[in-house]
Length: 201
Picture (tube, rainbow, N blue to C red):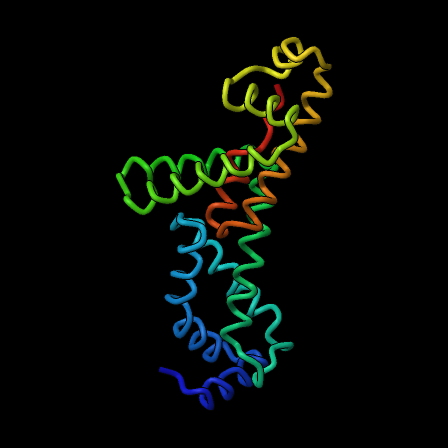
């Protein structure tokens, strides 16, 4: 294990662009950082991407690293920020959502007890979020998301415009994602970002 004094010396060398120092830091923190990312996103390939991005970032900003501050905290802060950026990107990118859903489905089909627990927690939190919606917005959400109605069908049933239905869905799903952000871990928030993005119907 690298002692604090040794780590400071290694970080000073890293600041100077020493490749051996970078490799030492990489070897020291890779496993812990990967496990941290995997615990948050639950998808090995995504966790690996996060870790690689973190170390790339460390190399890019090496001259600004302060060896006197906690390097571990710095690493995990970069990892967390990276995950949130990915979460936001996935929320608006259909292709990325599809890719992540395929990986989540593969994990679910493997019979993972952890994933089943996670899915139950997601459903319980989703129900709480939906219950907090204003009555009309809740009804629109239930018709579109739970009953599978199109925006046009929902508009006809409720006697409102299709534009109003779309507005309700946009506000409902935004609230649900924010609710998950406040009350759940990043893995559930990521799941909400993927599953609760409005369809353009």
